[in-house]
Image 1 (tube, helix red, strand yellow):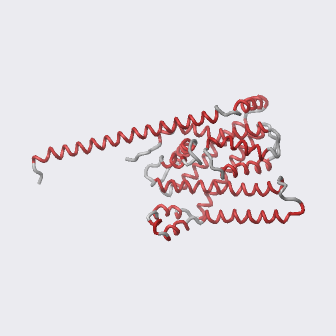
Image 2 (image 1 turned 60 degrees about the vertical axis):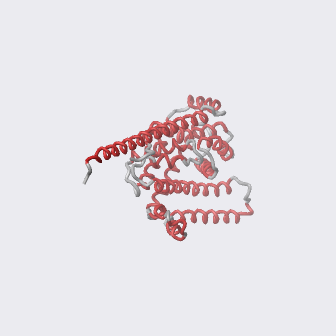
Length: 347
């Protein structure tokens, strides 16, 4: 039974509660808006600092103009189209992985990938990529989504290590003075060690479910069991499919690099380009860095390796910058347009 005099009190309580909910929602919207503005400003500022304030920009720009006047422009168009193929493959891969936690469309996955690039562009080792992607999801557990995204990145890293190791073996055999004709057995030992390393990494990746069992062996980790279950989501065939997509991506940006090298008059054959570019990708993947500082590092590493087969250092540097600009800067700019899709707070 409701006491008549209590009705106004109940109404006041309801009104106060609704008011507080509105204030919290409005506060969340304001914080979300501020975060989105900060992301866009930081991304644009970092891009400006590394693109337009690059000390080699003028020299590379002059080389670009001189080669552009002398050659057809279709190779650059092809490189640009391959950029979309590259990130489309990544979007397909992420969609395939994240669907275990939340069904998403390919379009949402594409937006998530570009937003991940935008947020990662100014964060160490591109850790912001995880936030850029998972904040596009409607209902998935965000920690699980991060772990799933990491699993996809591990597959890409594995592809880089596999092809980089093969390139390293070829490089030592063909270009290094470490081996000579009288010590070929050292080369076979190197091949054997490389094979063991690659096979071990593949075996560990294809058996990620053991991580779930590992969590159960330690009491302090058992409370995180629901997150460790992520590593049991995928079968070996599914993980092999992810490696296939990662390898396809690797082939795409390796081809982009080769086209750019030829366009900027760096005389290399396909095998030389694949070998040296794989070594560049392998080296850059194991050095902690911020995505936007990679261009200077990439340029130095590229000149070191490609300098063994070509003396056109400015051509090598321009091709390296072109690959970086196409695959990171342009997608990051596209991502700034999609920042409104980020959902920092859920209802």
